[in-house]
Image: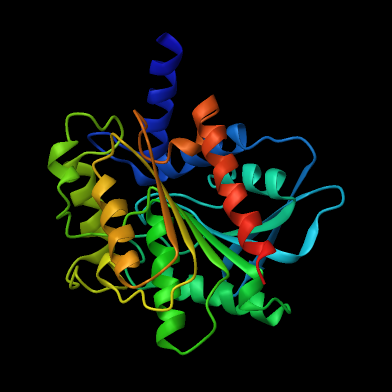
Length: 296
């Protein structure tokens, strides 16, 4: 029990849920957590700059897959997070799939509200295309706000008439900034990480003055016709549980191949933590990715 409580304190720190937030301190704390929890043997972390966007390649320092790539969008409510913080997930993905993973530091709110993050994600996507990857060589992954960003990017590519990624892997995706899901109320006393006060703050910082039903802000309200196969994971005790279940329902209505796993007793982006259920969930992510890459 004591170990679980320590873990939950760390998770709360990672998500920046305190009464008087100091964004810079939280961003630094997340980087420290990412550096600590992202330490995996035999991995290389290579930084690069792309038109003012810091990016990080994560790969095995031995033989690994070069033909396909994972593009990862980090979480943090669009106000915190970084490629360093993302190592809690990108290190596991790179080690388990033997693929290279590219994460990136999109501009953060409130300094850079919508649509800055989406603009940066599109630049990173375009960079991968210029490097010789085809859209079907890319698996797009994202956690929390990063799941939102992965969906928004795919919607934008679709709007532009471009080829879409091979598949999407979404961990506790934040899909509805209107906070209209039933779990927002039903899970408010169970969620150990997120609460209404935090959500209101990050929504205000990211999308003040915007129409929250805009699909590029709340992808839940987008048109998923023609979307690639998608795998969604969510914790049973999240206030954002409905963000995943309703997303999956809408994707099914659009005839998208989609799978949802709800993990009993789990919280928001539990996959970043170092314990058995988190590793099992990441194994399922890897299975989905490898499965998709084997289908031509």
